[in-house]
Length: 215
Length: 211
Image (cartoon, rainbow over all chains, first blue to last red; front, side, top):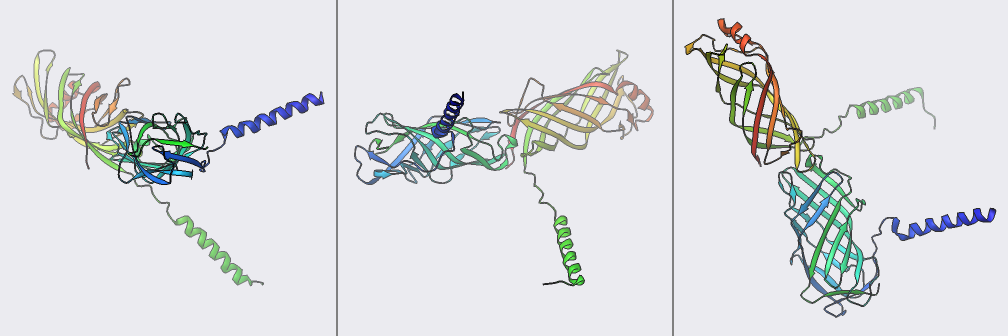
């Protein structure tokens, strides 16, 4: 009887430890150190990147809206560093969300500070990995006549090497991305609310495809 | 270190004064953020007792919207109009009707997604002039109007929404009270016009946010 009780306790303790190790806890800002190759070369260097997506979905628990597209322009330069021991795999210096439909008009929305994609999952030397990571330091501001808001935090993202698509999928109102600095907005978004953001950006570098390995 | 009773008293007084000063500092008031939106508005009102219609507008509905709360104030100035009805089913009566704004329009827009529910109340004195019975002018004076302002609540239908820019249809039911200062016509008018069950239907379109 005592042995059975001890076994049960051990199983519960192991289950709890496993649950914690499987990512139930908050995401950390640190990313994995990886090797990044661009156009097949992992020699140290910097490679300009642009990106565009065809649809963006944003939501709080009280309101959801869409934008026609997101785009990372050629200027200021967003870049991928090639080399070994890379932590900040992609630095996005500007991103505009265009055609964001809100009551009474469209709300221009944009990234307001550089954000970096960091790898948190495995990546092999092959070119078909779906590399999991996070975009850290993610801060966007939307502003139009009846509403201003800022959302800051980090967002989940995956880089699909075969298509060079960076998918941002911050969903389920995790609280990783949080609304602040609200002016107006008719209570559609409120300070402290968790925000979802989903889009798939097609990355383009004139130097070639981005490949991540060694994680 | 020891303190004298006088020093202790001074210390207590200083603490009390500080507390009082803190209590008297007003909390920073949250300034409302107001955005003005102007709409085109046009509609009709059906007067139940006379079974007649009165045109409302075309006019401009101005709303000063608190974009934090959705509360708004504003105005809906209605141009003068006229009405025709029959007494006892055969004697024609014509009159000019003016809606004189008695108080600012007030209301709330409850935005949940792109469609919103609106509730609002407009308040007017209803003024009659140039009253003709069977084509003959009758003296009603220039101050023939309702004793009290007529409160007209309007809102979106439950199954319809209001778009912040495209507008929508606002409907409501209201009561007209007694008239005064209509000379010898006062008893006649008060027997013919006042009453409940009057309806209003206004179509609001083309919202323009004033920059």
